[in-house]
Image (tube, rainbow, N blue to C red; front, side):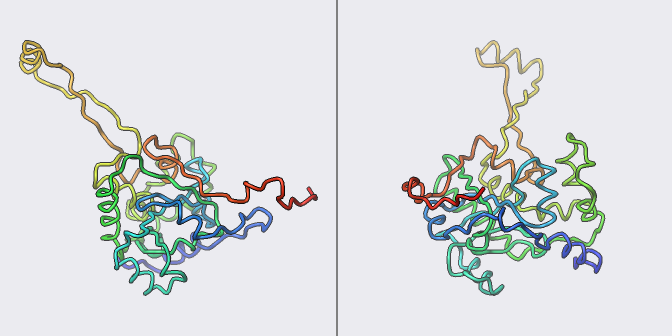
Amino acid sequence: MKAGPLSRWALRALTRPLAVDARAAPPPWECASLSACLRPADVLLVEGNQRVSRVISYLTISPWSHAALYVGDLAPEACRDDARRRQEEGWDGPLLLEALAEEGVVASPLAKYRRQHVRICRPRALSAEDRRAVIAYAARQLGKLYDVDNILDLARYFLPASLVPARLRRDALHFGAGKPTEVMCSSLLAAAFSSVSYPILPLEARLERRSLVSRITRKMLGRASRVFRFKRAPATLIVPRDFDQSPYFEIVKPPTPEVERYRLLPWDPTP
């Protein structure tokens, strides 16, 4: 459904970049050096510089407000076509798949975030075949638009986030009709990893109930009477912070060649 004028205004207001103090802004990083330590299906967390980014960071108690999927050499041609069609600068370089509130699911160049704080989260033990499957799933969502016509779903981002109790902060991101929450970047990635049964949050074990006859029979046969099933959190409840804190993802820091000559670094003597 096409968004109404009020929803379009809300989206523009929420995604407008905020003024950042130049002294606090991170120095730009080299795209080549970062891509050299990235692998397909890695998750790139981004601090973000929009109003909605600040709200998500506050509600999730984390600096990370956005997550994108690195596709690298496994980028389908549809990804490059999408970046080229959108006239993205650097579309012929390393690409990311991401979900944006104002555009839906798109392919973007890695260099897009070269002036922002980022973190690499790598899924442990994910096979090469499943890496391709995760990327293929996300690529099939390209061009998918989300229904943002319900202004109630967007209005919650204009409310003072500090008024939301700590126990309700995660739920506050999913209040309303539900459609705009699907555009959350982390929901796209969670669904992609779920397509190959790869967990993000720790699995919750629950005891499977069995009938009395079944329990007696299993006991007579010497088999375990307790059978556990595992439950994963729905994709729409995953937030960027979950990739950072997940025990199933490891943090990979990009190379910093300047530290090898730390004694020669040109430090500014002024405080």
